[in-house]
Length: 186
Image (cartoon, rainbow, N blue to C red):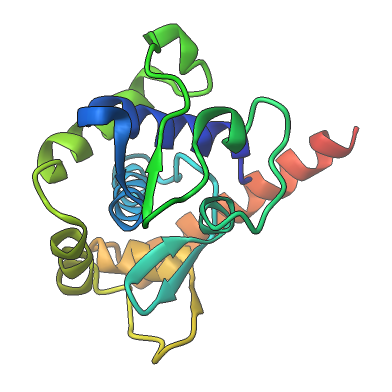
């Protein structure tokens, strides 16, 4: 299930690692997607719980993009508490002094994945990382100026899982989302 607080902290963590606590929003979106993809590969679940869509610039976390674009209302302690409004195609961390304890929505495993993604992609510019996702994420297909959902099954298959295993892993995510939805309504 999507967690605004968790994805806000993911974004905040990446921004805390870069010079000036600011980066192009396109690069941030790709880092977030690649972190979720790595988590899917290693643990069978995304970190953010967001759904994925194919857009002209590659795979994107759907709700997260709405927050970056200011199209979603932030809850208390959520996106707007962590990330500045987009300006000149960049986003920034609202506060530059964070400790590990501030990222309390993220497990140590989540942080390890974010660190691995950062080490691998920190030196890429926004267009380079965009091109990387076009060339190395076969689950993405050019939506020809629009957007289209990328099912988790397709990501699992692109990661080398068999069709049967990919379907089972996708069903496990859907079951988890349904269970979390029940508890969220209580």
